[in-house]
Every structure is written in structure tokens, then in C-alpha cells.
Length: 393
Figure 1 (cartoon, rainbow, N blue to C red):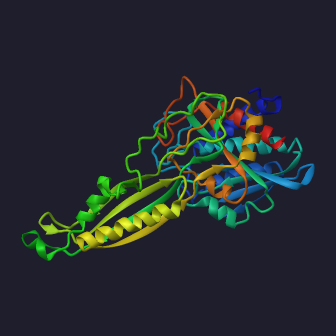
Figure 2 (cartoon, rainbow, N blue to C red):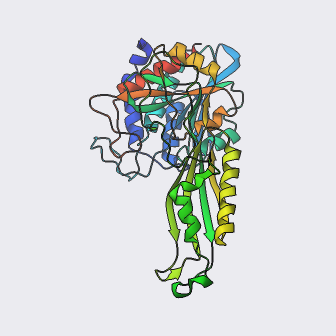
């Protein structure tokens, strides 16, 4: 991809912004200093903006004011102690380990360009808080972030792609995520008289061992999927297929607690679980409830199923992907992943697309969410150029 002079001229600015943001990562919902940095950047350039909780939206009037498209960047960090050794590494115990500092630097650099170049149509820059678990997208939408917007686009840094490469796909690109808490209640008793108790560990064991997803020979939920890993890099085939077959549904138990003593029948137990799905959410939840009722009937327990958070699958719209293909002619086909991304919430309201932006090179190759994650800022210029090509369509 050839990068235009107006983007190349802002290489130093983009790098500076990324590094200044990298020093101040803040957890989702608490991005006060980050919000202040964004607002100061916009104010210095006379750009109209308004705050939505700890997020920000900025508007640019185009030559055609009848239509508006949006670009989104997430701004929060993660509770990870950084070990990159970079001179601008965070010292706060938090870290921009998912590239959100890069996403924000791309969008702020685009904003700087738009102060000099009037866009063809109205543009909205959305700086979204709380992507890492605080349901920030939903709250931004409730605050009016999508009012008057017809399409939305976003980039996400990808260490499995080389610098300057792009990947995406039509349809489900990232899984929906349901965070679940499942409690079983039995009756505590001394193990010497276990017949007087109801063991709450027994249904928990069936939940954890994964065999419960087979019911009458029918696959209910795949606790041990054989599909390609979500970390597997996208295919190198430059001919992007219209649609890639989604992965199977995944159900995972990540933490369990139960019982009070080694010689006591456990009167209660709990499992913290996640369901990753690409379709049929209601059917999966109904079948999970059926399993829980069967275990209660078998062991004499009772259960409580609590849904702590729901993020829908990220589904790219075909018309938006057509624009992405024009912006990045060598677009690679992205395999669906089990990871979730709340940009999906925007895509349930209006058409749009998420595209992976490659950052891998000889110096940086650590995965997302690792304490050594990093990237060359030169990769960000491809993101700015990509957004420019989208808005020009």
C-alpha cells in the first residue's frame, strides 16, 4: 500500500501520540487522563467534540453534509505489568497490551489531517472507553455516538500479520461472548454420613469434564473444539472468499470453587464460565439450562445460572467489506476467532467492518495481551492511510 505524503508528513506526530498514550494506560471505565489527553489534542486544533462518560466523539463537516461515517478507536488499557523495557513503558502496573494506544494514535492523526483536508462527507471519530469488559460500546451508543451515522469502521492491530498487511472477512469474524456464573446448591453433611448430604461437587464435575455436551448423540456445546486455533494467522490467499465458515461453539470453565472442608460433603459449588458462539445464542442457552435441570434431577441439587455479560458476535457487513477491499487491494482472508470485541455492538446497529492491521516485524512478535507486546509505530501510518481511503469512497 502506498502511503500519501499528508500521512507520511505526520509520522513523527503519530509516534509521539502513541508513546504519550502508552505511558498512561487506564483500566476500562477509568480513562480520565486518557480522555483529557484526547480532548486537549482536539481543542488545540479547534475540533468540535463532546464527552460520553470517559469516551469522546469528534465531528468533522464534509462537503456533503447529508451523510456521515464513523471511525472508532478503543482507548482503555489492561491490568498487566509491562515488561517490554521500552523507554516509554508504563510504570503504573497497567499496560496498553492490546494496541489501543495505537488505535487511538491512528484516529487522532486522522483528525489532524481532517483539519487541513475537508472530507467528502461528514466524519465522526469515536474514542470508545471500556472495550476490555466494561460494555463501553453499548454506553457510547446510549450516549448518542451513532446518531446521524450510516456506517462505521475500525482497525485492530494484529501481531500475526506483517507490517502493512490487512485482513478481514464477510460475516462472523469474532465470536460472541457470554460470561456465566453457575452455582449448585446441595446439603452439607459429614463424610461419615454422606447419605444425609447432597454433594454439590457432583454436578460441577459433570460441567467441567466436558462430556455433558453430548445428549442423545447430539452435539450440544463443543467444550473441546477441534477447529483451528484462534491464534492461527489468517490465510495468505489474496483472493478473499465471500464468507468463511465460523468455528464451532466453545464452552469453557475457567474457575471453580466448592466445599468447606476435606471431610464434609460440599453443600455448594460454583463455576465461572464463558460461552463463545457465532450464532443461535438463545438455543445454546436453552440447552445449557436443560443440562442444569438434568443434573439437579440426578443429584438432588438446585442451581442458579447468572449471565454477567453478553457481547454479540462481530459480523462484518458485505457492503462495508466492499469498501475495505478497495482501500486495501491485497486484503487477506481472516479466519474467525474465538476472541470477542465489543465493536460488535456498533455493528448490530449500523453496517460496518473491523479490519486487522499487521504489525509483525523482526523486532516485535509478542501476542496481544502479553506483558511484552509492542510494535513499530511505522505500522500505524498504514492504518491512517487505510482510513483516508475509506472516507474518500
